[in-house]
Image 1: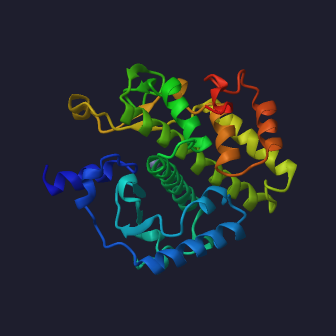
Image 2: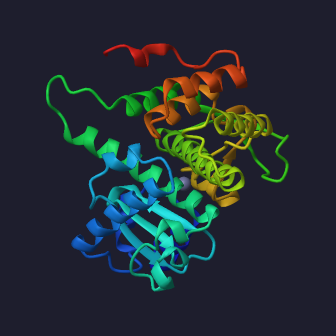
Length: 302
Ligand SMILES: [Zn+2]
C-alpha cells in the first residue's frame, strides 16, 4: 500500500481501526506541556458553557494528541491506537493549526464534531485501561462491559442501507469483530454529538440550561424522541472484505439498527453524568417498550 492510498483511506473515516497507519502522520504532535494546558482550558471552557464533562475528567490531560490539518472530506478523524485526534484547521486558535481554539468561539456544529471525537478518545482510553489491567479481580469499566454486551447482541448482525439515499431499502449483514466495534462506536458518537448540539441549541434559544431546568430537559427529550422516530442515530463501518470495499468505503446502518433508548440512557448517565431522574424522564416520555434489548447481565458483578 503506498502513502497516497493510506492518506485517502484515512480521509474516508474518522475512526480508523488499523494501527499500522501510524506512518501517515500529517503534522507533528503538540508538545506535552502544551497538550496539558490545552486540556485544562478545554475542561474550563466546557464547564463555563455548561456542557458535559464527566467523561472528559476521566481522561488524563495528555492522553490525546491534538493535530490540525486541512481536512476537506471530513471534519475530523480519531486514530485509537495512537490516541491521535486530527481536527480541521478551522478548529484551531486563529486557524493557525497549533492549538485548539476556545470552545466558546466554536459554533454549535464544531462542538458537535469535537464531542463526537472526544467520545471516540474516551472509548479508546477505556480499552487501553482494560488492556493494561491483568490483575486478579479487575473488572472492566461498566461502560466498556455494556459496550461489549451490546456489540455482541445488537451489532453482530445489522441492517444496512446499501444505497445511502434510499433509506427504506435495507439488507442484512453479519459483521466481524472490528466492524461491529466500529459500528457501535460510530453510532454512539453520533448520539453524543447530537446530544451536545441540541443542548446548545436549546440553551441558546431559551437562555436556560437543561441541566438545571425540567422544562428545558423535557424539550431536549422531545427532540430526542423525534430524532429516534426519524432514525437519525445511525453509525457506519468500513467493510473489511476487499470485495465489498470496492463497492463502497462505508456501510451505513439502517433505522432498525440505530441506537436504542436503552443505549441512549446509559450514555447519558455514564458518559455525561446525567441523573437517574433525567433518564427516567426519557424512559417515560419516549415510551419505547423494553429499555434494554440485551439481558441485564451488566448489572451483575461478573
Ligand atoms: Zn466517528
